[in-house]
Structure formats: C-alpha cells, structure tokens
Amino acid sequence: MEQILIEGLTKTFRSGWPGRPPVTVLDGLSLSVRKGEIYGFLGPNGSGKTTTLKILMGLMRATGGRAEVLGKPAGTVEVRRRIGFLPEGPYFYDYLTAEEFLFFYGHLAGLAHVELGQRVVHLLDLVGLTHARDRQLRKFSKGMLQRIGLAQAIIHDPGLVILDEPMSGLDPIGRKQIRDLILSLRDQGKTVFFSTHIIPDVEMICDRVGIIVKGRLLESGRVEELVGQAHSVEVICDGVKADQLSLFASASTRMVQQGGRCLIMLPGPERLEEVLAAIRAQGGRLVSVTPQKRSLEELFVQKSGGQA
Amino acid sequence: MSRLLVIGLNTFRENLRDKILYNLLVFAVLLIGVSILLADLSIMEHQKIVTDMGLASINLVGVIIAIFVGIGLVSKEIERRTVYTIMARPISRTQFLLGKYLGLVLTLFVNVVVMVAVFLLTLQVYHAPVHGALFQAIQLMFIEMLLVTALALFFSTFSSSTLSAILALGLYVVGHLTADLQGLAESSRSDMLKGVMTSLYYLCPNLELLNIKGQAAMGQVVPLSYQALASAYGLLYTALVLTGACLVFQRRDF
Image (cartoon, rainbow over all chains, first blue to last red; front, side, top):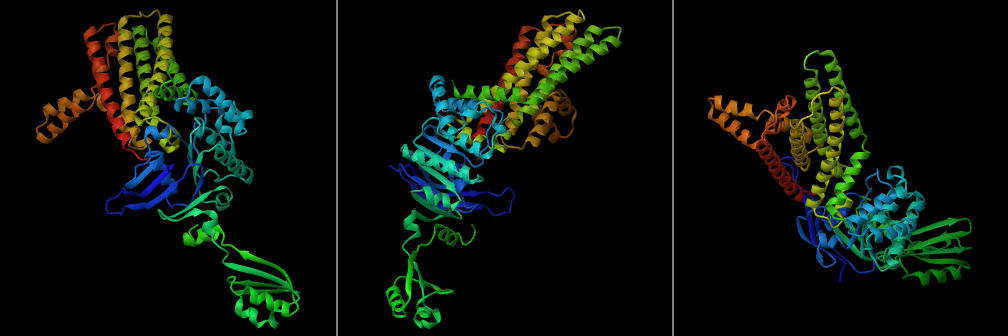
C-alpha cells in the first residue's frame, strides 16, 4: 500500500481584494510514497512544498484533487493518530521544559502516563537532550529545537513521519544529527517524507526524490535514475600538446592545457576510443578517464528554471 | 487523559507562566488598596465604598483578563504557528478550541478566588458586613466573564488580535447599554433606525442582567429565581457563541 498518494492536487488562494486574481500554489500535483522509504520532496522556495504538507496534515483544505495517507483521506483524526509531523520552523510552547513538552505531546497522542514516562526518557536519549530535560525550550538552540521537535513527531512511534524542511537553518553538525536520526527511522522500518531545498541532504539519504516547481511535480524517481547515465567524459593525459591534436579540437567540448598536462572534456563516450588511440599515437601517457554524471543540483536548477 | 483537558491544563499553565496575569493580580490588590484609602478619606459610608470598589475591581480585572487573554487564545497559536504541531495530533478542532477556552476559564476562576479572598479580608479589616448578596454578585460577574471570554475567543477565530480586542470591548460596552438601545428604538421616528436598534437589542448580550453590584453593595439579596434565570441566560449565550466559534474555526486554513 502507498503510504502517501497524491493525485491531481490543486490549491488556489483567493485574493483578499476584489478584482485581484486568485493565486494557484498547487497545480495538479501527483506523487506517491512507498512503505519504508525516505522520500525527498525537493523544490525552490514558494514552489508549494509546505502547502502540500499542510494539506496532508489537514491544516489546509485542497481546492481539488485527491490526497490519501495510509489509504485514508488525508487530515482526518484517524490518520493523524498514525503519523508524526515536524513543521518548518518549528514553533513550540517555549515556556515548557523539554520533558514537559514531550509529556504534553504524548498525552495529546493518547499515550498513558506510565508508558509515556519510559518513552520520554528513551527519546531524550535518542536525540541527545537528556542533559537539557529540565531546561525551558526558550533557552534551546535552533539545532536542539529541531531535535526535540523530531522527538515529539515520533513520540507515539508512528509508521509514517512527515518533516517540513528539517535541516533548514542548521549548521553542518546539526544537519548531520538530523540526517542520522532520519536514517535511524528508516532502519526501524518507518517511512519518511520530507521537504527540503538543500540538495546534498537529499542526495545523501533519500531513496527517492520528487522535484516540485510552481506546484507541479516535474521529476520523480531514484536519485541515480534522475541524474542518469554519464553524459560527458573527462580525459586527462600527460606529454601531449593540445595544439598537435586537431582531432581533440573537433571531438571535445573543452580543452585545457596546464604545463605538460592536458584536460579534454568529451560530450559523450562515442569518440573516446578514437581520442585514446590518438593520445597513444602521439606518445602521450593517459592519466585518467572519468565519466561525468549530471548532479542533482544541475537537474534541480534546470527544472526550476534557475529559481533555486 | 482527555485531549480537551490536556489542552485546557496546558493553557492554564501557560497563563500561570505569563507575567501579565501576575501583574493583573497586583493591579487588583492595588485597586482594593485604593478603596481602603478612599474609605479613610470618607467619613460616611466607608464600608459601602470598600464594598463597591472591591466588587468593581474584581469585575474590571476579570473582564480585562477575559478580553485580552481571550483574544490571544487562538490567534496567538496561529501567529506563532504552534497550532501546526497541535493539530497534527489526533485532536479535533472543536476539542482544541474548547480546551483553550477551558484553560482560560480555569485561570479566571483561580484569579477570581484570589481576588475574592483579598476582598473579604479587606471587608474584615473594615468590619464591613459580609452577606449573601456579595456572593450572588460575584457569581453573576463570573458568568459575565465566561460570556466575554467566549466572545473574545469567537472574534479571534477569524480576525487579528487587535480587531478582536476592539470588537470584544465594543460588544462588552454595548452589552451594558442594551437598555439604551431599546430606548432609542422606541423614541426613533425612522423605521430603519428603529429596526436596526431593535435588532441590536436582541442580538447583543444584555450584560446588565448579570450586573447586580449596586444592590449587593447595599446588601440587597436578589431572588434566587432571578439569579438562576440570569445565569441560564448568560450560559446559553456563551454556549451559542462557542458553537459559532467552533463552526468558524472548523473551516479555517492554517
């Protein structure tokens, strides 16, 4: 069963002033998230990521289309019982201590007090905040807030966790901590759906990725599939003068000569053998041949038309 | 524990940790202190002045808390986006809204109890009589606070904090002037004005029904049937306003 199924989802905001046209944020968005995977929902700012997540959580109503979570219409109380959510920000009651905070969300999730006590101790340990259990959240750093936020999202041990920009605004250490926590959730068999505009995070931990631009899903698939086959080849050799090789000029897209070393960038592998033979014929020494893959960043920038 | 109660108790905790409430308590104590000062200055009826000022202070502080904390109950949650993680839990919007209301009612109750205790102590100091009429007045004042809190909550489900404050305060003032609305309607020659004033008279809560401070200060006990009827009116109006608030909140996008 698909954990999340979105088909033709639209969301239009009416303008508060008469005469102004409505704003379409989601424009027929379709995607699906499978059990046990980490799905990265990638898009530039304002592309509709948070709106999609809000509709999934029942914080907002869709104008059209279908959104199902765990096989049921998104946003119902029954569905919310079985999922965890960390919004962007995030914003919490900052007058609560870390422990009070987790007890509050545990009680809201319907957990019994005794069971919750053990769970809170475990989660504080998991997110590395046992030392701050009695500290009010207003004294927490941004990274600590994200970690305690993640702890509240999984307090009731949900099978599906939805996170909105969980790594945004964190330093490299904070990002790594959140990445490790997300990976540990997958190891426990949970499904994680998270939105982000930070590409390295997606490349590192996601099983599948969807790219949303202007409210539409432009690409979806495994990272390797999306970045595709090698589309150019870099050849480096020594002892060959580029100007001696007219062949290289016609075969390559770029040639750089630095001292005795020559870098030749071929647009594809088709003429590689021919170029290698020419290097040998000139008495040159081959240093390396590296297929160049398109990075997810290139794909993202291309798909978003430079908005990222 | 019921989710409504979890929200209610947390709202109560938030109010307790909010310094504004402590300031208001100090304010009430100060007002009662002023009444003591006035009583010292006046030779005649100083006991009545202490009673009058005490009841008026409790009423004023209660209504200020009801309006200014009430308008933030929901709008603050939305502005600060804390509502996102709450509504992501298996809790209905009605439970959330009523829980917030319950939390403030609990805060008001504790505040009123503290203020009444200080008030009774002041009366003791001045050997002023403590009679049932005072408790009747305080009970109806509390019903008024319940109603005003519901109004503030209702407005905050669809408007900003500032607008909610203006609307709630406006309705509170009009609520004490409904008799004048009726008088205006009767004396008006314009049919339209008559219609508008009569509609307003029936639509706005008649808060004067819940105001028996004058009689209480003079030790006049009102009939129990009046007290019961006025309470029922206030509670019914509160229930209607809360139902309206739930209906509006149900349709909101966050």
